Length: 634
Image (cartoon, rainbow, N blue to C red; front, side, top):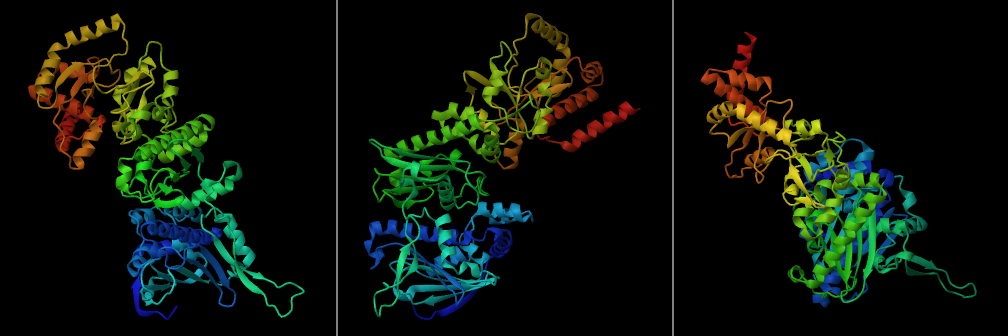
């Protein structure tokens, strides 16, 4: 390896500087993870070379045995981690090392709290990777060459982790990457053979490639003139964890493998390790994380299931193996029935993939159902992190709609809390005699749902209502239209049928008849705003409410979509009035056409606001309301 040339000094992105500073301070108490992260990266590099060499065997050059080596130098106070994997070009070094190549980095950094313990978890969610080197090193040197490139295409990268780095061309005879850490003062405990070996066996025993260290072999006692020799010794088990029998694997091994495959900092909630045999043979090791990653809602995020074929890594983020609503699931799937040169195009129409996907989805849903049944508190923690994503399921996965429905949790009028902890089975178990629908109200916030005037008659009758306030809820209810034979019914849409007795129906008819003249006057005054004005049986305390047709989108969702620039088909709501309310009685007695029109507008606008709608003329509404208040004050 010759001296570097063509040196260039470049500055880190601002985000890299911030992350390095945060990492050094927040993760120092668990500093040993630097070795896990660097070995994990080296393993990925070996995986990628093995896959690329399927179509181009020359990439192996003259070194076919893939491995990772860890060494140290007490005099120089350095630790070196090297691999003979795929390596990097100069451009790749700049892209992957000088830049945090993840969307959402800015928002992630803005979420940092200043509490080192909490920040450590956040940083762990983000993934620390190469930058963990600076937890223990005050200078890092990286030397690399891409497999298949000539020796003079090597690259050297050097940085003290403070604002800039140097990058230069380098002659490097061997492919792969070598990272040398120049340790900070006080880190000499790492310059120890036993210490490094114990870290490797603790954190990286599951790595599929040999992680080797030099071992000194002393000559036999009776041998003369023989000197000690150095041999490489494999420290880890060097076998793919998922290929081993479950009975041979300890829970700690499963957890460490999760941290490797998911680049996470915390233990998973649960995992499922299965081997399927028969026509379609594959092994799956699937994990449910404890905490949502920072980019859970980023459609461009690329993480999830790693696909292997006969233990050869093929691709990461194999989106065909898991639906979007389960995008938080991490793990590996290793198939014996796919070709090694499988591509995303081949995956698109593969019956093998369809079978693996179907089986894997059922495993995940069964895992979640088991947690929900056996440990409700743990499931509630899961729901807080991933509930909104699970709610996407009924729209995406028709075949498993009932299973997903069983996993859903909601806030309801039964608890009154904002915590989404009530299952649909819980709701059905409390349904009143004769009740055949699951009632819900969708609003912009929990407070708006909880205080909706539509709930007045339900409270009076003691009927439980689901309180929906997540943006995804409107999408959910448009696809999960029934559960266990019970129709989901919005209390704010369509005609309300609460199984009223004959006497109540007759009473409503009489109220509608006596209010006939008022209804006609209001409909005329509001003709451009409403489809109809009618007497309601929904209200006990409020003067009026907005009612939508069954197919109409909730008012708050219409507002959000309009604000986002979407054109929505024009539709008019129905205004229902409570003829027993003092304001409505005063309106009925109003002789002035102008005041009657203003009062009608105010009632409509109030009802619209209560539903999360948007006023066309807020200033006009305030002016009319103020004028009415002045009149009353006099």
